[in-house]
Image (cartoon, rainbow, N blue to C red):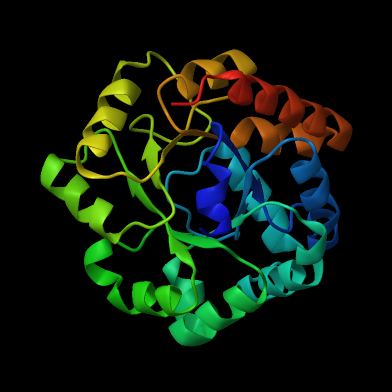
Length: 258
């Protein structure tokens, strides 16, 4: 049982997204242990990219700040390698294929493993094109997390489920990060569809911003991902951001585990 699987073993998992390098990698290195201590079960470390997919204005601005400070994929991996012993929870690396290709797929997988990364989510790499990265990841015990959207047809959900390890990430809406959550019917329907074809945990992200919303989503999902609300709070004041992490974690952890 790897660390990602363990995170879902006994309770609903709270997953925190942050943008690496916002405002600097040294700041991120200091934040990661504090986020884990505040109750995160998994930390999703986003690698800033110049042409993001589905990022709303909050995360776009965070990526711009990170890029301006010189943050790169290699720099993020080096920071994680130096910091990993201080972080008690799994690390999910969120990135894009272009930086991976620039490093080389095998070299990336080796560096990610050496840095203590537990899972990789490549937002612009569909499973049909992912054989090389999936193989390189599997050889180094890196879980591969894929996204399912409300518009994903059943046949494609089955394809994504076969490719996924660790957990499956269900996007709660069609839109961008930071949008309002709205009703839970699409979430309940999407999670149910995934569970028909996979025994992996299902985490839900996009639109979750408050403890009440996190608690509502946790009743349906196995895990809850919060990004924009935390990125915004941390940018304004780190103490306030960590307080929000604690309140969100408490809300998720109170949800009954199946």
